[in-house]
Amino acid sequence: IYHQLNLFLGKNDKILHVANNYGQLDFLLTMQQANRNIETYIADSEKRAVALTNYIVKNRKIVYLESLAKASDNRTTLLISCETIHEIPTSIYKIIVLKKDFELRSFINFEIIEETNELIIFQKIVNEKI
Image 1 (spheres, rainbow, N blue to C red):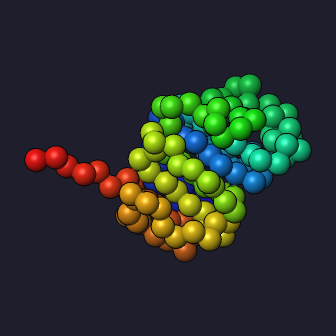
Image 2 (cartoon, helix red, strand yellow; image 1 turned 90 degrees about the vertical axis):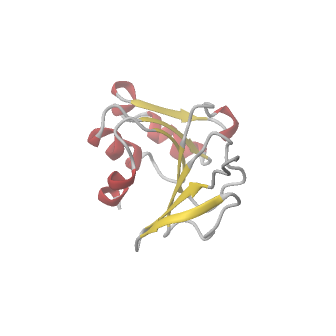
């Protein structure tokens, strides 16, 4: 999955990651591209505490949020590797869903632009004014 994600993420992307893990994916994504800026919300406080102990958090642009509401307004890519998400921030233009973790297959105002065995990539539908 990690290698497939790299195909859809830029080296300077500002990513909001909603997860249910211990920060492993954040580690891998920033090790591949050091300029990636990741804010991650892990609802489980114990898992979030473990992720915060990783030495890479001090050396790379990874921030673990106590609530999703504290996410920066400049995030443009949403990575979902958990079971649910209740709200999509307005700044998001691309959503990447890990299929094994998430059941929903559509989002309002987003369309599927790519699908693999492990991922679904959505892009915001932009209404052009004429």
